[in-house]
Length: 188
Image (cartoon, rainbow, N blue to C red; front, side, top):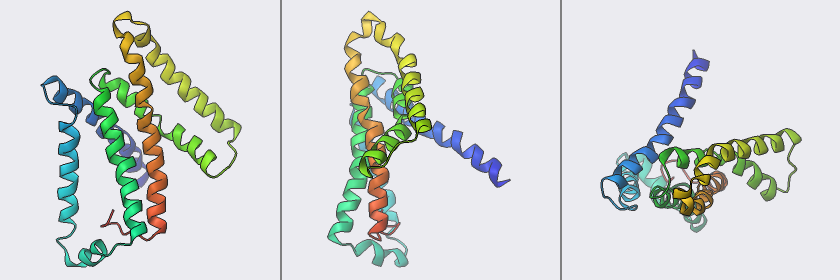
């Protein structure tokens, strides 16, 4: 039973992740600015975090923070929320939700490459093949859109969107650093 629920969790998380692009595009098409949707999401996050202060047991851990812990939290916030949402919603003015979600799905490739560079480790041939197949798959899906003359100015947005999976990949290392500094879950 646990395997089945874990297998179901992956497509559900993928669907929710894709919904941010769809909802963002819907907001943009109704005249909202590229910053309105991320601001609302961030405000909701702040309200949820303030809710973590309600139980007394959380107050001490949330209010006790070191300078290094705050720096780690700021790096998580920047790489996991601020930079990706800013880039996604600026890009949604030119790209479709499917294109932004597709490029965002390249996060594991960036994690592999950043991990190899960060830890000076080697990459196995199978991993290199996986990165190449992933890049080729995205290229095959995006190439027809780039060939369309009416979308000539959008090619730059494909490159800009690469900052999103790179930022998400960096956030994994920021979360790891925060964990090593004993930043509590309510603080995060």
